[in-house]
Image (cartoon, rainbow, N blue to C red; front, top):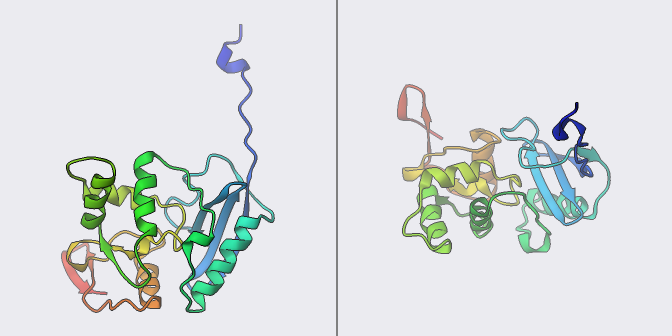
Length: 196
């Protein structure tokens, strides 16, 4: 006799629209639903498509067009407004708070994980926050560049954590005119071994 689990049909979700974008720093894949942009990842980056609850298929979508236009302006040296895009990332309440904080970091500026932990704690009515928990949420940001996780650095200027790679993080910060001369990257043999 078949169990209920064996007889239930899996829920089939409508695939998200997706497209490719050629950036100066590598190929990008974008995904969107009817409610907005769901993801933007450098091809091959950590957690690629990890927050999506349905597959992707290549097809047109108004939110993809808007995001590609935003990227065109950004890579041409402009400072496009995030607010003109409908963003609809999928995540927990905590992650959504953190991703909102990322959206509030101005073009050409950086914040530390500790700064974000303090602000997230305030917004969530907690006494204190955890920079480590912030790091997890920032690392799982599904909308790179537009939700600027590359603008978050470790304490003392450590260029840590970016799903698209530290070289891209540095390139994006330099593209925005950030003075990166005091930033550094930890190596396996030393915690503060080489300057960026």
